[in-house]
Length: 129
Image (cartoon, rainbow, N blue to C red; front, side):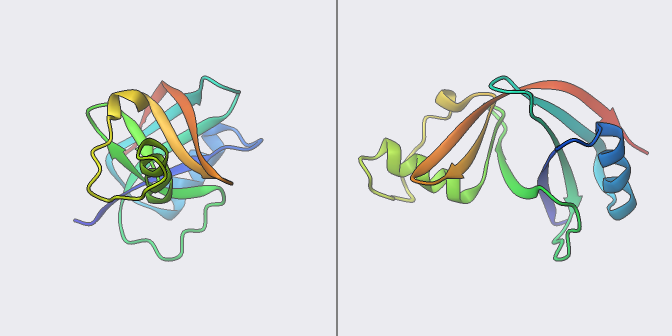
């Protein structure tokens, strides 16, 4: 199994519409789609596992993310690199040990000049067949 975790950001679409599109295109591992709400604004994100790699992902506003299970932190590799530079006086050291408790229940994304920390909460878990 080549498990990949994806995060789809919802625009004006409803959760049900996007879930239907995800299910049309992919088999979801573990039969769960997690609905996350941003605590910083009214954005909603869906996270789900696919047996990948998925080279032709058709869903807009979808990125590959990684998860630190102990703190429920989602992040992109580029955002992690920016976090390390921020915490390590501007130096990117891939052996640097990040204190993940600082990023508990967050999604880490890149932005110009650094990273963005989006605080999240679990809104719902959708069980799929």
